[in-house]
Amino acid sequence: MANTFTHQLALHLRAGYPLIFVISKEEARARALIAAATEQAKETAIYPRTPGSTPKLEDLLGKKECDQAVVVLDDVHRRLDDPDVLRLLSDLGDLASFGPRAVVILAPYVDLPVELSSIAAIIDLPLPSPMEIASILNALCSEHGVIYAEADIKKLVRAAQGMTQAEATRAFHKAIVEAEEDADRSLASVLWDKQRSLWGSRVLQSIDIPPDLEDVGGLDRLKDWLQSRKEAFGEAARAYGLPAPRGLLLMGVQGCGKSLTAKAISKYWHLPLVRLDISAVFGTDHPEAALSGALRISEAMAPVVLWIDEIEKGFERGKGGHAPRLLGGMVTWLQEKDSEVFVVATANQVLDLPPELPRKGRFDEVFFVDLPNFNERCDILRLHLQQRGRDPQQYAIEALAKTADKYTGSELEQIIVSAMYAAFSRKDELSDRDLHRALKETVPLYDTFEEEIKALREWARRRARPASTDRRKIDLFSKK
Image 1 (cartoon, rainbow, N blue to C red):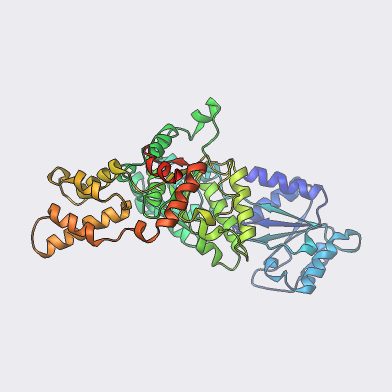
Image 2: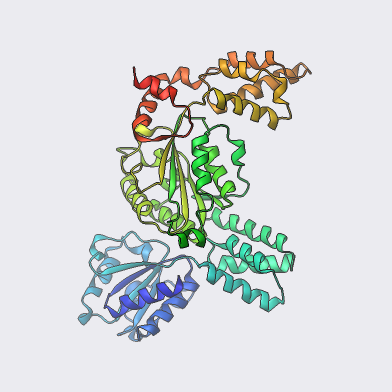
């Protein structure tokens, strides 16, 4: 990763680009790599700003030592709305009348003004690769005389993927000092620091204890699809000629297990899980930079499952503001990514989604998650009774499932919870009567949104694969 960045920057310097933005929040690492790139390009790098000072741009560029040198600046991205700063940078296009050989601006993000688009290049500095992270860990182990097994080193490196060089160094150092050669404690320490580092992104959340796929009732076709790709990450699959799985779009009725399934995939595939909060992206000062940074972190963590819940809320059809540019960036990334980031997006209001998102090539498959069929309702009821310490064989599950034909999975769960509260208040054991009474007292989502659910089924009949074997409900409404 670092070698590729150094080569690209050196290439741009040789090609005569007068203005180059290096996008990274790792200032120290970026400066070291910029120095290596300028040396490779046979140029001299100058850092005119003295630490602790904030001089004007014209004073920095006017220094004599900047003449015919590669001048490295920071914090200029905050001043691009200043007409004087914009004028100075625009003049870099006329190198014959200006001092620096080139200007490299280090910034965590940039909203490039149109005035600079013809002279500027933008180069992203990727987060440290697994090889770079392993080098950091090995150096610290050697320094402290600590020896980990090879398998434990791989786990520690994987745990630190997605962190900056400084974050990984601090996390490893702390783990070694705290746990010495206890690999399990060291791993837990690094994972904790990793979670804390993601808090700073505001839009990404690491989920450490996802549910089991067995906790998801029904959805047999979707589970078969997941099983067939369980071993599709890694060198063996690539050697066989297979690309890495790209992702799934799970559409369907609210409360039928889409989000639960999205989280369970990571545990089933033994991959870390990260949630991207689209609403939080729009709430930042620079949404495009926030989204780009989140995707960059996800790629550095690969292989990883990236969960985007209720994706339609961020990219609904006709939404203005930043949404069109964010949608363009997301669609391009989904189409072109070659990293092992498996995206699981969920959506309830599919008619609000722009047509670009569900198109083939963005995701491997689009699955429709309907109201649970009879067998799935039985599975869901049994599952939630077992999770609450009850033997399902002691209850008339099939009779209850037959009556609950319009209920979502989450509503079935709440029926059991409500019935147990009623029995508990009487200081009695849960009975079938409690369950049926709770069922009658629960108004299903279907009764309130019947027309919307029918429209959703009609949409899915022609555009998505059913997540469950039983398609009788979809077919029934297609004939009406």
